[in-house]
Length: 244
Picture 1: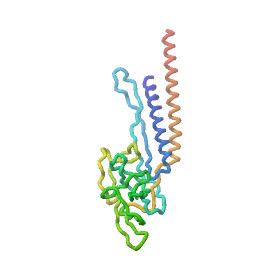
Picture 2: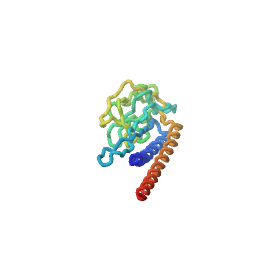
Picture 3: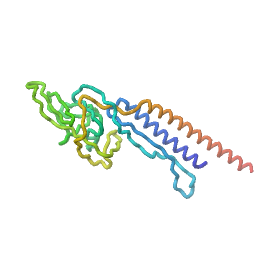
């Protein structure tokens, strides 16, 4: 009885957290480069001498689905998508290096290359700055060339190179960006390539997430029913003891 109560109670709580994660995934179906979150639950015993029968449910793993999303052709010269494994590097709000797969870039009035969130895109020597009045091209290795819109249109100058990395392990931060465990910067990887004129879509499978949401709703309903049954059994046991 005791085990059932604790397992159902903590299971219902963890199921609500899973539902929030599924809702977060569905809300980012249209977010460039978004990676779906995955949760797995398991029951573990409570280490206690007083109540050795108690058990509760924990979120055993909070993982990220790092599979590639579909490439969408935009035709914009400053849009870029990574082919295969790898990450773009941006400067997070905390000033530290962070990683993203979203490659819809813009140029600010100050000439800084930023992503959709306004975070500065990092190059080999720091934040990338682009000259004004130019058209830009991004090569497969991340090299950015500028072609003047006035004067000699045949002259293309290299103005920077995207810093591309492929760390062996990353974790998602509260800001949605990824970092290496411990926050150490990753080394550049020349094997990472990009496709200019494309952006990577979200890898969230809408049908799969909707099925997961329905399943979680049924799990929550079952766990609340289990709590109600445990209460009814406890009341019946009390009546039996008092009747003796």
